[in-house]
Image (cartoon, rainbow, N blue to C red; front, side):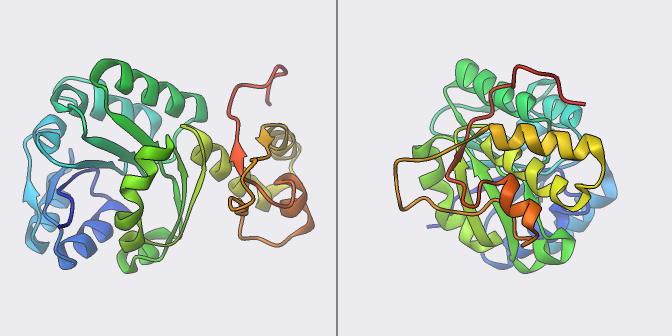
Length: 239
């Protein structure tokens, strides 16, 4: 039986995914502050909710796909935020690309307040891949939580890698984003910091690569192979 879903943020990336999920037989409740986007999701077969909390109430997974860190915080912890409606064993999966430390803090805050897990799952591929279920997903989260969402992730991605604990998916996405702009000093410095955050896993089975790009710098920045990412803030500042 497929998990029931809430989807908060049915914009450029969220709407194509919602349409695909509905076509695959998922029951999806949607919320967005932009009414036409909600109406488009309804036309595809989703159910409209009055708020993020209303969308989240009683579903198995709460999916977020929002444009900014502030938008994620408001949708989860603001007035009528989803966190107020959650209880174990519900699980949050955040496809948004937010600041690494904020992502870790959100996960800890949700766990403390509700006992529910949070997986950061930033994506690459754009709207076409969102519509066809061929996204690349980098996940950060507890092992047990990640194991629960793997079957679902198979329906939205062609490549999905568990990078490590909460925040690790976001750190991997940061490295990926910087690989194309290495010639810029600030980007180069951030990649240096990202590399210092990489730690080896003791499990030989966990040998994913962070980036698809095959440039010498991408390979170097990720240490060749990457198993888990430690996203504690480095001692020196990042430009």
